Length: 209
Image: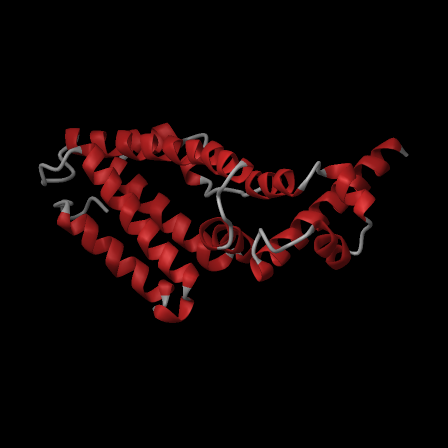
């Protein structure tokens, strides 16, 4: 009976967070209220406060629930990087873009994070704490680019850090603009050629990717 109660509570918590994604996406974080979310989720305000102290805590839980692309955190990540670092970078990039295309909830959370939240006060603190995870991903990609140069997979003399920042800037710009206005360009058709051109610009040797 206790296990069932915990399971029910988790189901309710997930329903609240799923609803928060929809409400935040539709109204923006600042304009959305806990009453809005409770009404749309079909729960009481008491149920909301059972799980979350306030809207900031709910927003934080929504971000933390994101399932980030698996390759960047895979158990065999280091072995993949050692075997073919440039291929690892390319596959991790493709996985992230693919998740944006196929996982609606994943995409909507990024839309909220990028376009529908004003980062002041406690919200700025929440944003900064989650930026640390992005820094970790940058470190992983930089390590892979360092190995790619050491293995002579790329010819350009750009530093691994420069190559990493260039790729992150390319991806962020592409996805930021697409989530802001999907009608601007078809991400599925554009992402592959654009990223491939970046790798060619680094002098990726034939047959590596």
